[in-house]
Length: 139
Image 1 (tube, rainbow, N blue to C red):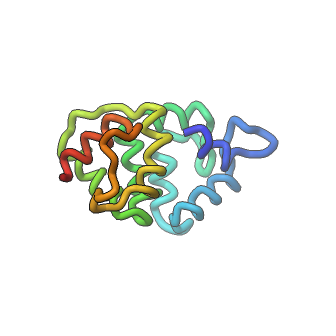
Image 2 (cartoon, one colour):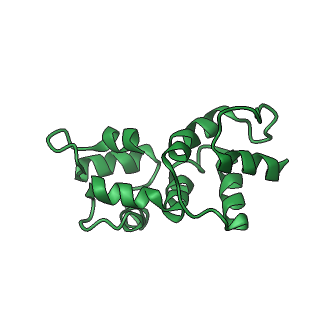
C-alpha cells in the first residue's frame, strides 16, 4: 500500500497526497475528474479535505476490506477481468474483513500475471490465502 501512496505523495510533504497527486491517482486509475468518482474515492478513505489524503487516512482506509474492494473495483477491475471475479468471491464469501500488507502488495501482481481462466495459476505459489481460496472457489 505504501508504494502506491508514495507514487502520488507531494514532493514537499511525503505524508500527504495533495491535489496534484490526487489528480494523478485519478487519471492513472482511469477515474474521470468530473463526476462523482473522485468524491467516492475521497470518501472511501475518510479524507478530511477534498483532493487531499494524509498518510494516516490512507493507512486506515487500506486496512478495511470494504475500502480495498472499492479501490480495486475502480483501480483494477476496469483493466483486469479477473478482478471482477475476485470481488464477486469476496462479496459472496463474506468472511474476510481486513486487508493485510501481503494482500495489498500481491493483488496487482496477481491481476497482471494470472489468466482469468486460472490456467496458469500455481497453487503452490506464494499468493495470500484469500487469493488461494479464490482460485479454489473459481475452479
